[in-house]
Length: 458
Image 1 (cartoon, rainbow, N blue to C red):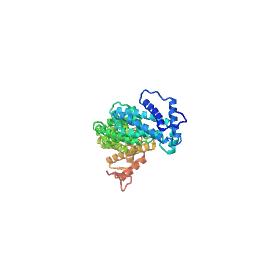
Image 2 (image 1 turned 45 degrees about the vertical axis):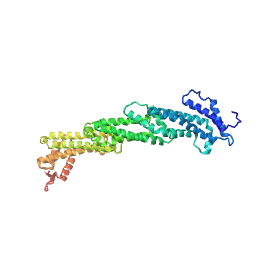
Image 3 (image 1 turned 90 degrees about the horizontal axis):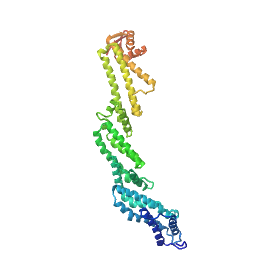
């Protein structure tokens, strides 16, 4: 073409169409040599000249329209028929191929028509060529096939959940289309894919949970739940968009844990109480990990823990009381031994459940509502020892007074010191305090005439 000649619209467009047809043939895999730099320059300069000729031969608007029409014609004649004849995984593969080809076509055509992007489009405030090219695919292809693509992807995800091998790379490529079609926004991915995928996930795990809760022990159920959560996280890392992770895990946690929390924790032979009774540390740690993820999930766990620890403590006290009231245990050496055993058992109970709070329950504040002594606070440990000693002194005074009925202060203190000496060396002031306390609690009374004489009341 002579540079001085005017290029008329039909003539210039015929030349451009030859280049566009060559590009389509390359994309379709037909035998066609690649574009040379000369080919590219000829196509670029044809558009340039047709846009810079003096009116009425400035064809910028017409070329802008024809750029869009080139995509529309190719999509209608070639892309849509090839997609409509395929189904399921085959349709997904074709969709990925067509999207990839379309982006290549947009890149090349936007280069040929580049002069429009530089001058004409900004001056008219029109969408740029790249956006126009992607919008053609969105409006003509995506809007028709996204429902079928979504259903096919969800079907494959469910197959994978059932243990089948699927092509994860294919799913990643398909879901990238849902993301990329939004041109920087996530609305298409969220509205056209994610919302349905989350509903399907909830339904899938609702079905699974309704069977597992009947068939499995609490530890087995928790193992399955933890494995499911791990696999769903894995799905996000391989093909779902990262923004889906929290929403997806929330659905799974709701169906597997929130819905069945009470049934699971209260399972008769394997629930929380049974795990505490049988010292199942690994299972209790797993219970904490799972239930800490759901709203107020730890409340029932900490409540059951508190009930269990309290019950264990009451049992110890009852055992000590029974032993103390046992006639055979009246021998002083046996009494001292029992009290030593009781104190040791209380300390062991404290240590055991404090270890649970630290190791199984991650030192969570909810579990510190349970009265256990902190590990390194010596003051608290001393207080606990004092408390145990007060109990031992009380028990000794009551036993002595029960057998003697009436006794003088000095004699009572002396017998008390002698009885407790096998366990610890009691402080006389502490014994005096305990006598006063037992008087206020109506175990003893002072003689009205002799303040150093005590009578047994209980």
